[in-house]
Structures are given as structure tokens and as C-alpha cells.
Length: 325
Image (cartoon, rainbow, N blue to C red; front, side, top):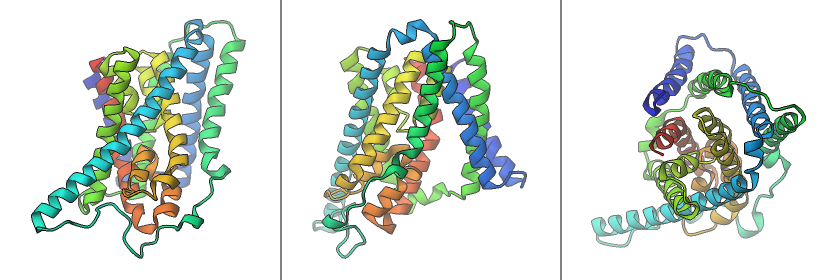
């Protein structure tokens, strides 16, 4: 199956989920959340099992981990640089238009609700609980794969249909949340942050392609997860490269973990919305509470919309770039 056909199928399942909500056939939101968790755990268990059961993949764990760490750092660095450059350019254009230097776009307004230096939120277990549970599921699958003899399973068929079900429910969840992507064009921030995050992450991916001597398409597919480790890893594995899928899972999990540590620091910089970009696709859920604590309530629409846009791009860009590789 070609990359274009794969993209259409993924989008079709997401659209079908949204349509079910539109015709008032969707279950309660809490049921949707539970189903997504169960299906996601099943996918990640299979991913871990595949990694532990296949000797070829086990022998490449060191290589996979190094590639994952490099991708996480490069995509984050690219994001921060791109957002800073985008705001600097926007400020210059505004200064030229109005004939004077514009106020620092994306900087904290005076009297804003951002925290002071001694009011930084502390990172607690609640920030790491979700990623930790998913990592445990992968580890349990990996240990189960190690314990059993190598099996000749058609992992592609198994994960393919479960992935389609997951995307259907993700589309349903988006519709239930009432997200309006039109809000991305209301403020410059809500459009600029996700665009710069995307470009910066992909630039980091190109740096990884050069550093690790892999094809540009595969490196871009790794970076295009934007921190959504559970989906990007499964997508790439389902496309026929479980080793690269494992690297994508670890790379995007590492990006989310680094973002949780960097958000309080970036929120105090001249361009505090780099904190939103650091979270990537997770800016709409996992890292959103921390962004709100660090930047104040005004940052919530920007963070939520940026994460939503990037989340919708993941199932499109990952298979598209992988097909180019």
C-alpha cells in the first residue's frame, strides 16, 4: 500500500469517528477516553512484544536508543530556534509597518499572569504518571516477547486494524472536545507557534539524517511525531519498519519528558511561547497544565490549538515522509 493510500485510510477513520459524534451516536466522553486507553495499551504491548520477540531488533537496541535520543534533542532544539526566529521576524515586520519597534510579540505582557521566579510550579508524579504507565506497558510486552520463543506473527495485520480503531476513537474524541481549528487564525500566536514547531522539528530531523546517515524521509518521519510517541511509533512499525518505529516511540517519549523539564525555564525567556512549542502535540493535553501554570490562563488557547493542529498532522506527515524514504 502506498503512502498516499495509507494517509487517506487514516484520515477516513478519524473523519468517521467525528461523523459518529455529529449524528449523536457517540458514547459518553469518559467511555471514549477509557476505550482509547485500552486500545493504546494493546498497541504498545504488541510493539514491546515485537521488539523483545524478534532477535534482529533486540540486537539493535543500542543503535535504536542512540537514534531516539538524538532525534529528541534535535527536534526540540529546532523547535526553540524556529519559534524565536519566527517571533523576531514578526516583530521586525510590525516595526516596519507601524514605523516603530513593536512590543515583543510572544513575550509576557507587563502585569500578566505569569509566575514570578519564586513561584515556579514543581514537577510531581502527576506530570509523569501517564508516560510512565505507557512505558511500563511496553516493557511488559518486551519481557513477554523475551520469555516466549520467536513467533511468526503477522504483526502488520494485527496492529493495522487496532490502529484504525484507535484513530476512529481519536476522531471521536476531537469532535467531543468541541475544538474549533478556526481559532488558529484569530491570533498570530495560535497560527505561528504550531507552524514554527513543525518547521523546527523537521529541520531537526534533517540534521539527524545527516548525523546518522539515514534517509531524509525516515528522519523526517521520526521528527514528525511532534512528541506523540504512542501514535508515531505504531504508525512507522505498521508501515514495515519496527526498528524505526521503536526509535520513534522512544524519541517522542524523550521529547515529552524533556519538555516537562524545560517548560518552566522556557516560560521565563524573552519568547515564552517556546514553552508551548517544546510540548509539540502534547501541548493540548499532557503538558497543557504545566504551560498554564507557567504562562498563565492566556496561554491556554494557544497551547491547546497548537497541540491539536500538530496532533492532526502526525497521521498525515509520518506516513508521507516515511514513503519518501
